[in-house]
Structure formats: structure tokens, C-alpha cells
Length: 98
Image (cartoon, rainbow, N blue to C red):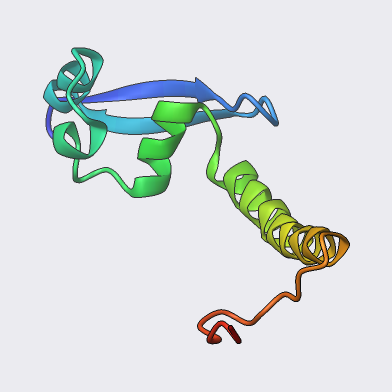
């Protein structure tokens, strides 16, 4: 990459330092408010996310894994709430028996 910058980013979660190589002009456009995917489309998405959020790819995957279990918990809670209200939960797309 011609005219590249080395940007040091410390993950906000694990505090590990990572170097991201970015095009100088793209990085300057990003710093001026241009959407990162427009300013630096050649940078992999996980590195763009690191620059935006300060969360490294490893920690990001852990967050996604943790949130997958949360979705099931929300569904179970919704079913329990519906039963407490005297409602009978239905499967997605199931017709209303009315």
C-alpha cells in the first residue's frame, strides 16, 4: 500500500495493542467524517471495526458468541411473560386461532 500509515489501536476490552495499516488519504477522509467503508474500502471489515469501536476482532467474536445465548434467553422470557398474561404463545407464521 503506497503512502500508508501504521495506526496503533489498543482494544478497549482486552487492552492489547494492534497495528492497522491504512492508506493515508483514506484515513484522513475518515478522520474528517467520511464513512469508513467509503474512505477505506480496501481495509478488511474487522480492521475497520477496530478503528471505529476500539474492539479487536478476537473480543468482537467473543461478544457475538455471548449475545447468541442472550437471544434464546429473551425468547424464553417472552414465552413466560405471555403465559403469565394468559396468552398462548404461537410459532412464527402460525395463524391466529380467532
